[in-house]
Image (tube, rainbow, N blue to C red; front, side, top):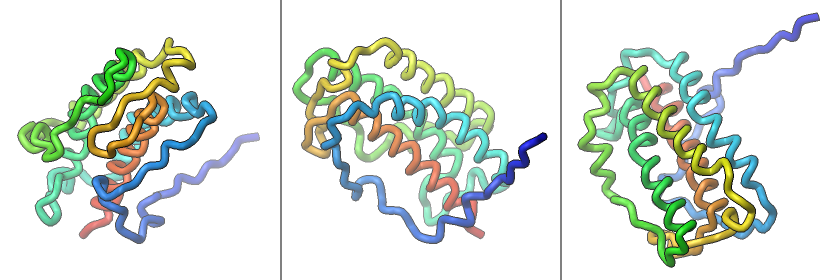
Length: 185
């Protein structure tokens, strides 16, 4: 007895614009350990991204609607920020009071020329750098999960668990943006 699975195109369900990343507010008040679920989200992002790209026409990958990043640039941006997440994790582990800042202008992404890369190369690079992040997180203990540093832009304490929930939310933000862009005519 086989199970039939219907593939659902999530582009049909997104009918509204999402809040811009820098306008989002985050609640890091959870006290229960949800870190294993966060790790699952992080580990699944490369596969979700790869699967999503199978449904998007190659002729729109470099299109820059309203002079925003293209789909390829959104993918490259995920790769560009992974060293920041890794560094902030090191900051927390090392007991730094404040986490390292990021370039809020995202010059690295703007200057990287991600549109000149193949989709396969972009997906491979993201998968590789995300796996490096996950390897850093494999053996941490519960004390480290709840250890924190001050997030420089949000000006709020961010525990390891919060940092990677933030990363998972950032991943989903860009996946939703790619879905939105794929719908544009």
